[in-house]
Image (cartoon, protein in one colour):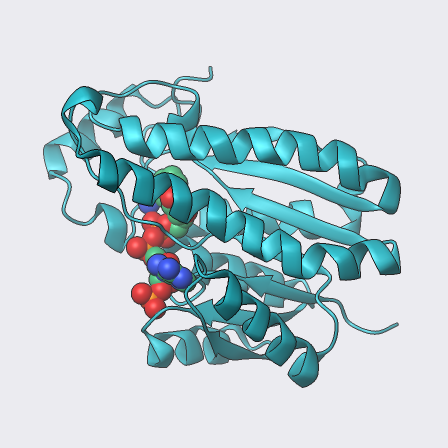
Length: 244
Ligand SMILES: NC(=O)c1ccc[n+]([C@@H]2O[C@H](COP(=O)([O-])OP(=O)(O)OC[C@H]3O[C@@H](n4cnc5c(N)ncnc54)[C@H](OP(=O)(O)O)[C@@H]3O)[C@@H](O)[C@H]2O)c1
């Protein structure tokens, strides 16, 4: 049987890099998308030991994603698995005080990136009668934290789109699921105070914050044949914080 091909947006660092490694370990070919860090994307793929290639594209840009998917399919074959992971930055602070343009950029960037990925990979999956779509959301889409209004709103929109898409694509053999990490140790959280991370670890039943591999393993599971009966789900992956 042909090995399946996964496309991971934002695969050059952090959670995306761990997803690439976990998928490669499961035998997927992997197309690693990045925005600027080509060297890191190449290193992630090489260290994963997997087959694949790296592809530059701004995940928020429909035209760039269309061109990337075409390039991926030319180089590696049809995309069976699409993972929306690229980290779209967001303004922090009380929601009412955030500049609307920055909130709007986060909403458009997050949902636009997911829409572009689905628009350009979904039809192929439907045509072949098999596919996996996984969106990396956040525990913050359901559990409120002061200062994260823009992020929470954009990730909640992502969750909503996934629920509907799961119903729409289910009859065609395509599953759609949301993985919702809690706080994970990546470049995106490197600037956050150590005391805050220690407080989150203390409040978490499993008494630590997340590592990228904790998330990568779950995404890879949802992409596997073993997860064939799971769709439309929102899976918090956060050591039990808020959810236990
Ligand atoms: N870290 C957390 O605590 C946490 C918690 C919950 C959810 N999440 C979610 O997990 C995902 C990954 O976050 P992370 O913490 O791993 O981030 P990260 O370490 O900052 O890595 C960001 C990744 O996204 C890529 N990227 C950024 N903008 C992009 C764009 N416009 N187009 C394509 N790629 C882009 C980067 O590529 P370059 O290397 O080329 O810049 C990099 O590969 C995000 O969706 C985030 O919201 C993170």
